Length: 128
Image 1 (cartoon, rainbow, N blue to C red):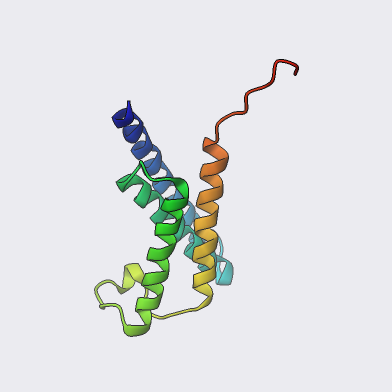
Image 2: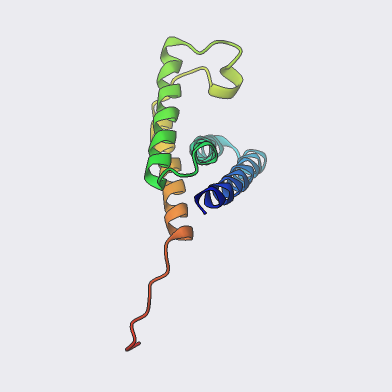
């Protein structure tokens, strides 16, 4: 049963990752300026969340969001010392402090989405 649940969790994570990439491409192509940049930052962390969930579907939502946030922040801080040129198109090249906030927003968006979509329904009392 647990293996079956992990397999279903991986499919959900893969679908979520695909939708996140589509949303990121839509935001970049349909908007511009600061909105596109910071929405892209938030969606980057949402994508990392789905990738963490894909790798380890048994993790709790809070752990997935925290791991993705820590990864996003680590990449941002690594930009201070320099990211290898080969990885710069994927990970960025310059440190920007506001990005840290938007990574937090992305992790929060993922957490809210997962809690909202996958919470257990309340049982109604016999009196209702």
